Each structure stands twice: as C-alpha cells, then as structure tokens.
Image 1: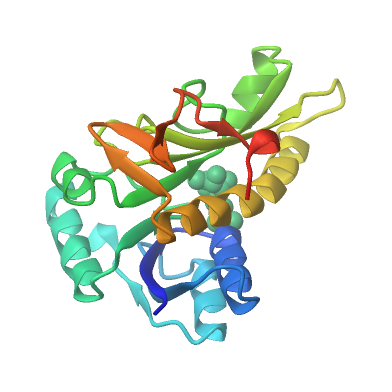
Image 2: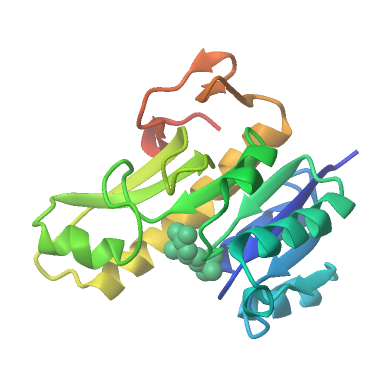
Length: 217
Ligand code: GRF
C-alpha cells in the first residue's frame, strides 16, 4: 500500500513535480493525497491537477490570525490522514501548535546549508558574505523557523561569476534529488525522529545531516 502524504506549497511547485515524477516512475511508493496552497495562483496547483491530485487553496488573508489559519489548515490536512506532511516552498511561518501537531512527521526544504542563512534571500546573502560554498537542507520542522533536525544537505561551490539566480538554479536541481530521497527514506521507515533528533536506520544523524554526495540510496 502506498504511503499517504500531503504537500503544502505557495509557488512554482518544482519540488512537488519531482515527487510526482518519481512516484509515477515507481521510484517512490507514495500517494500524494492532496496539494494545499495558501495562494490561488500558485503554479504548483496546476501541476497537481495535471497529475490528478486533489487541490485546495486556503488564503491566509481570509483569516483574522495566524492561529486561525493554521487551525483550519490542520483540519484540512488531517482529513486526508497523511503519514507525512511535506512543505515544498510553503512560504508561511508556522504557529507552535501547528508545528507540534506534526512533530516528527513534517519535512521542509530550505535553500541554505543550515544552520547558516535561515530565512529569506539565502543565495544573495551567501554571495555577499563571500562564502565558498552554498547549498540546500532537508529538515524536520520544529516550531522555530528553519531550525529542526537536519536530514540531508547538498552543496555547490560559489564561483566568482555566480549570481543569486545562477546559484538558485543549481540548487533547485539538487533539491529535486535530495527531497524525494528524504521522503523515500521516511516512507520506508528508515528515517525517524525522536527527542528532537533525526535518525537514519536507527543511527543518529549529525547536526548537518548527511551530505548527499556521501548518501547511500
Ligand atoms: C525552493 O527553493 C525551496 O528550497 C524553498 O522554496 C523553493 C520552492 O521551490 N523552500 P518550488 O516551488 O518547489 O519550485
């Protein structure tokens, strides 16, 4: 039986597409039960519809508070009884109640080598700080922004010619490899979470997770 997940998006949804593609190709044994966006014009909704996946838009602007939005979102997600919630470019700060409800069963992908560059504009900030390398991290979601246990990272050298756009494009390509891999591990019960820490095959992962180049599929 395939593994039920719900994906939350706000934009293009290229990471969602990577999950759809890998599941169609049989590399991932998941069932994307629903895709939920807080923005009606998110292109990812079109990708989901094209794949026959139910979609919902929940506009955060229609709610009086962050708490009210998150409570409704939680209700909607839980109707599908997913075993995993995947944040794929979902541009919302989450309430503690929401994050705690999905503790150990919600993943996010963040375009930096965490714990460096939490928050926005990560590519430009890495260039401005003269970093030699930059990358992307998949992590469990905790109430604190971009701070949960890291599972997988992939990195790339920053060259003199790099711009925020060129870095973003290289990093996006890496995202489409490491995010489905983390989802696969979770769906196979190889990736677990206990007491704030991530484990792969029962081994505690280091603070920076596994560097993709060294990762076994
Ligand atoms: C990615 O850069 C991801 O790291 C960040 O949001 C972006 C989503 O891209 N969290 P897409 O919508 O999946 O194309």
